[in-house]
Length: 252
Image (cartoon, rainbow, N blue to C red; front, top):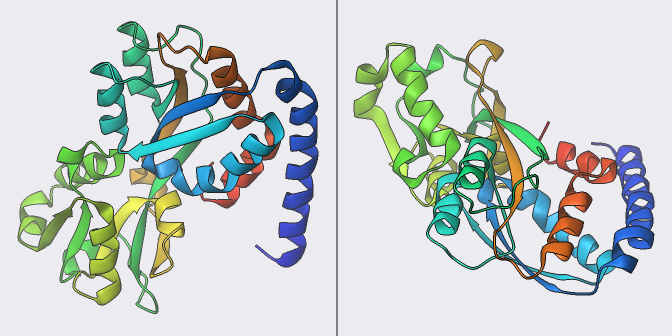
């Protein structure tokens, strides 16, 4: 994104936040909000939550985890005000009465990308078979990208060939370090997380024929005593100005 585009985005955000501040921020009493958030959204949250806090007066404490992990924490009864996870998991929590009915709205979606160490050749689909090694988040950790890539290799009929040179990582910080150092040749994860890593380079999204998108939605946790503030945060995250920021972070 060039400087002119960045300035344009900044102006859009400022206008959007100014409007938000004259609506939600003035009608909801300041509160402390606990947010359980999928880690794929962390790059966006880091950029956006300070603006929400400034415009609304609320304070937000965020705990990150994989989509499966944050949903599991709510399912087990952990106290919180909002959970943001993969949309099917929010639907499941809603059916279980763990999040309030009617609070779910899609705020972002992201695809799976391929990444390499900086300066390395950009691989394509066939390169997986030729690669010395590949890596992705351990599906056992509940991350959407790891679960999908494992199933993709099965669907492509190359899982057995790839198994000896496949490495699974949890936490994902080790995954990026291994690719950056050259220990692993090709990595897979959600595009938003890749773009936030300065030590690796996005080679590109998976080809459209095998791409998988994860949609993210918030749910207001049942029993929260900060429901008005939680709704204000959902409204903020659904606003056009915020969508512009999320797009710049790799979301669609």
